[in-house]
Amino acid sequence: MCRFLLARSGEAASPVSLLAEFAEMCAESRTVEGDRQEDGWGIAWLESGVWNRWRSLRPIWEEKGRFPSFPPTTLFAVHARSAGFPDQRGVLAYNQPFLDHSICFVFNGMIQGIRLNRPLAGRIGAQKVFSWAVERMREERADGETTLRNLRDWVLASARQVVACNVGMISGGKLLALCQYLDRPQYFTLHHTSRGGLTLICSGQIGS
Image 1 (cartoon, rainbow, N blue to C red):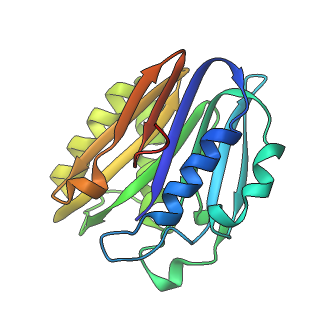
Image 2: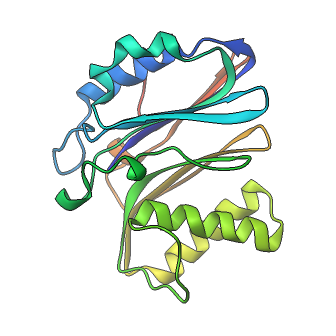
């Protein structure tokens, strides 16, 4: 189970300091099973109205030297992965954020025994949750908030057990989040702050 950060600023700013604080948090964080978020990471940022992405299979705290290469931006998302199963490690396509045109999407959680009434694109659960959200947004022409509410309702109705279903999404310039979990609030609670033109949603406490 993973960690993520969404950030929005009023003016384009370098993400370096926030990435460093996020990487430090990830280095110290452990999943509820005791694992580290060491199965790679990724960052997506908005530049000239277009989403760009960079992903790696190395732990984020080992790649701090790369942070200055990411340009100033008003919107970005970063995700550090802890693979749920050994056979899902070492595959770059599984690393988030996931992108679809104007949508940037990150997921952290574990959904057990979900029933699907139609095939969904993707090999792993996070990809399938993302595919479901994108399909519904297109079919229903729904905004991000409505899509996340529908996603929550679908997961709760279709799964045998929802250990956690935390989603972060950037759509239409907005930071959106779904925070749903069974227990272990110390790990699964999302944190939010907005001050000085900077808004953050993070799956752990960073900096001040």
